[in-house]
Length: 228
Image (cartoon, rainbow, N blue to C red; front, side, top):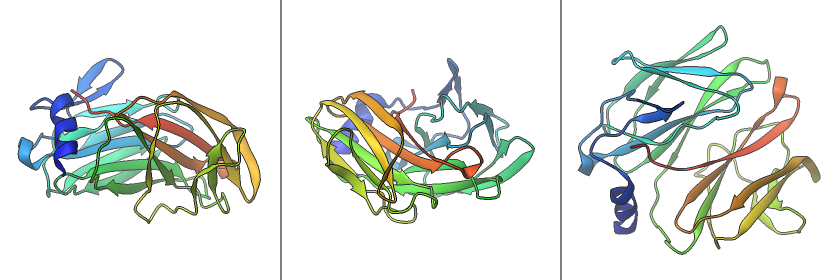
């Protein structure tokens, strides 16, 4: 991790971190030493509430469809973290290993057959700009052909041609109000998404996932914050 990102984490991270969900702090995994901290969050890209449980501590949390993203919490680096995700009657076993300094998102979406699936995406931040907001785009919807995210009402593309298996791009954007429009196969898809006024120094992630029964693409966002 660069010095600037270490400063960011130090300003917002205590020696022990836990997930914050429904006003309760829930420690799913043991926190590693500060110098080896890695960061993990879960995101619900489905249309129903999911339940995440760790495999060793017996702790669990829920993520509703209208509050889909947990905060990032610190975990021990380089060690397999076992658990399970319950979505309806389906159970998805998970085992995630996070390397030092990495920020990992485990995202639940619906496959074409309607069954839930989990995808892991890793970021290794190398820079931090206190004067700008950083926005990333995670594309987990194979049904959105030639996906483009552009500034609403303008012909300015923020992201295009990204894929879940690639390192997600992150753009530095001035702290201004931002609304975006998803475009699939050259056609506006879904409603305009309002991110509000971007805050300098904050990090945001746009998630593109299949919609209900994988019939329509859905775009939502989360602020990438650390849990205390």
